[in-house]
Amino acid sequence: MAPTYAPRLAEAPPHLGTAETASTAPAAPGRSDDTLRPRPLGGRIFSIFLTLIWLGVAATALVSGLRYYAMPLQARAFSDLHDLFKPSGLIGHSFGVVGSLMMFLGVGMYSLRKRVHALARVGKLNYWLQFHIFLCTLGPFLVLLHTSFKFGGIVSIAFWSMTAVVLSGVFGRYVYVRIPQTINGQFISLRAIQKHKDYLIETITARSGLPGRDVAQLLTLAGPRKPKGLLGALFLPVLQRLTRRSQRKKIERSLALRNVPADARQTLIRLIEEEGSFEQQIVLLNPFQRLFGLWHMFHLPLAVVMLLIMVVHVVVAVLFGYAWLL
Image (cartoon, rainbow, N blue to C red; front, side):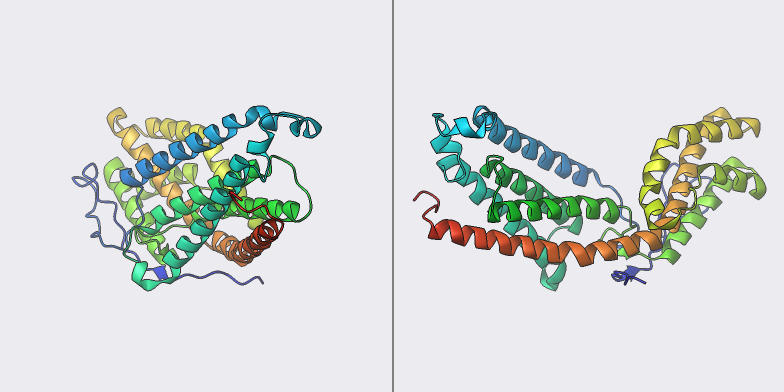
């Protein structure tokens, strides 16, 4: 059996006490720093801000040399843009330098943030992760422009290793965000998730006024399917998202058949879907932690190899007189 990456798990007391449910639902357990990680407005704004910068820089860099990149390789040497956008040209080489520095910075700062205890209070880990992704995707894009879409020799090895690291990072991000975490970035234990789920069931029962048997039937409408192996677990969140609308309609019809007042249905639907989300987390917790462990064993060594190949490429470029501005 493959080893599982096992970060320290937080035994989080559940917190679902919103103003909407406080009057009729059972009392919500108290808030603490180990509650399930919310999705704060600041985090969304920061993500949008980085996305806009990424798109702006990438579009500007691409458009500036688009006419050169669109030329056949044989015709580029005769273009007035060749001295600027060729890999050793002023702009082309600048893309390579800036892109490489972005990747070194992105890998280095995020690794330090996770491993140096003194940095634990310097911003939330999620913000560091977003900035890491920003640097380690924009950097490779600039390096791609640096190559002017022409690969060969050690450049080819460096480029494809970089591509593998980026694709690995995208996969890791997909897995990472689906493992429940606290606001401090610790992974939540199965016991803590179950506490949240139990509280939601109590809330649904109290607000609907339905017997436990009917509530259990309603919850099965939003519950996830059992995945078959790691591959099935990997695609289960996507399948759940694709079937969300049909599930919602089934829940609404079922509530109507049970004579639940129309003004209470939307709140109950939201709560039932939230309970289904917790059930999905329970179902996927173990396989996704295994996937994250396998990814962790692969991604970090691959990133180190990529950086070493980049260093070799830079040293060779300098030795052959292709240093920046020389």
